[in-house]
Image (tube, rainbow, N blue to C red; front, side):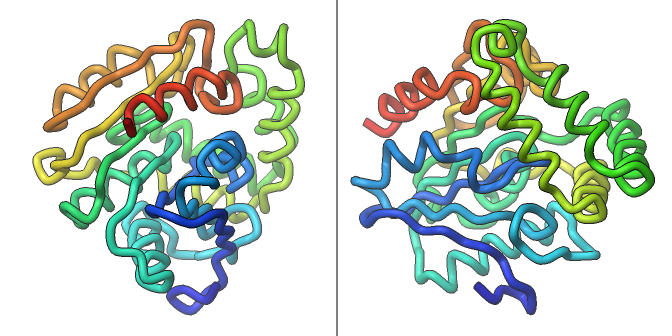
Length: 254
């Protein structure tokens, strides 16, 4: 799909009320497969690869704001007015900016491993990761993230999940990934008072990117939010514990 003068890979599944799924840093549309499989018989599920990720073109000027702009343009191109909006990690920041701008067009938010913006220490680490991607490629980054960002039980009991996360990262273009790291390092929070829809925030008790205390703080800043903390789960929430995430989403939508 041609959006803002570049190609953005967008998959669509099913018919019904629209649901847009926005992946995080190092992810692709494939992260969302459990959600697609569950909801495609009831919803029109729209799953893009963000610019500078996956199959989509590199955007040399990528930012959180430009990603929100691009996702809004995708909605316009697909003639989507109201939607359910779901994000993971960096994608949760994009979704919050979209919700703040779209008002009642967003029916609700589901945020996995959510954050309002990176803390200062993380900003510096992201800049260092961008440098490493450019100089050394993706292998070292993929190995580290597939180790530290997943729960111990996931790695011991479901090594295929660890391999899937590593493979998504290995398939990223190093320059595109570096640009995405820098975009996240510059991210600023959306105005929570402008987000009026219901929200469900889900994180793992071993999530080092979106720890429980931070997620509860973010939920408290939103108008109508509930939280779910998954036991023995790290940052790749849906990959590690798809069943509990899907159950929570079904309950939330009902």
